[in-house]
Image (tube, one colour):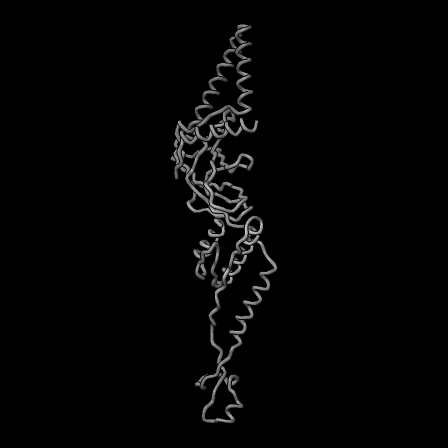
Length: 309
């Protein structure tokens, strides 16, 4: 049974790829819009069949007229459902990223010349669909589980407009990718690491030198004992301002499996902490090193290396 289901899914996926190849922006046309009756629509069609059979069996013109009117409403709903999705342009944000086990909110743009009604978007049918009201952009949730660089799954845009009789949908293959970084995890070793870094900076701050007295210097910094020995050469204490912090190196050990995932999570947490403190840091991973620096671009580069490790 599982083998048959896998073959069916593979065939269906290939069939969808032929009808709509990957694209950065898709405009819905008749070729990629699929209309199926909803559960309520199936009961409605069954009611029409029963009314028609009753009208023809008993030769009741009123029942036949009612069945014809309901058929007209059914055809009208079918046409309006198709027009609600036709010529709708769908696109997505170019750069997406999240941490593992988080829900990535994907901004999906829905553009049309006329307003559309009751549009729902989702990537996974098990997730709640996002409703696009009057806004041209809707945030669609996408759960993430593992780190890496992935293609965006198929986006389903559907609607039960106008009467809920038909489910008009389009299954789109958008040519976008997203990054999933390792989940940041705290570690006991980070405390000792932070303490050692703080001691180095504290020693740099406490380091004092002396220089000659200049007009305007505070008398509290005067070395009075030295002044007593050499009155002609007064000196004051001087601390170097803004000592340059030494860069920190983050090294990923040559491990695999669960140990590698733990190491990557700890490294991710440490990067975020150092970036928050504006401290320069470098990365050594898989015989590759990234020079110490700081900033959002440097952080993104290091996190992508962790995702692909």
